[in-house]
Length: 164
Ligand SMILES: [Zn+2]
Image (cartoon, rainbow, N blue to C red):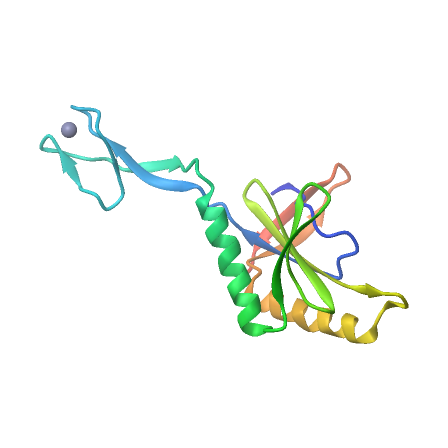
């Protein structure tokens, strides 16, 4: 459960992913000498076994890796998509596009949205753009999404459940 994460304006497809794993690293501090250790470095210090616990990872590298992974999945499946770097408002980052659509990503706490919208030409949406977005939306639901939005409350809070 959490507040709704932002999506592209006029999005025709949205999927959600759980990114609560992000930013956490296993870290331990030796009780005797206070030396910090990270996962896989060692299991003991000063002849005392180290106790590893999750700490928040302050650099945002996980997010960069995550976006890179999502980008790779899309471009492998749809080679016509190329990376781009623009914003829809302050929170929604457009990361991929082709002649027919734009795909954007946004995160809020432990939630991430990936949304798609057809590009408009001077005549409005083309049937081709709408169709393409529909195909991609179906694929996103199968291959990107890990959460279903199961409901919303009037205060803007949304409810999500893990896909089984
Ligand atoms: Zn030590």
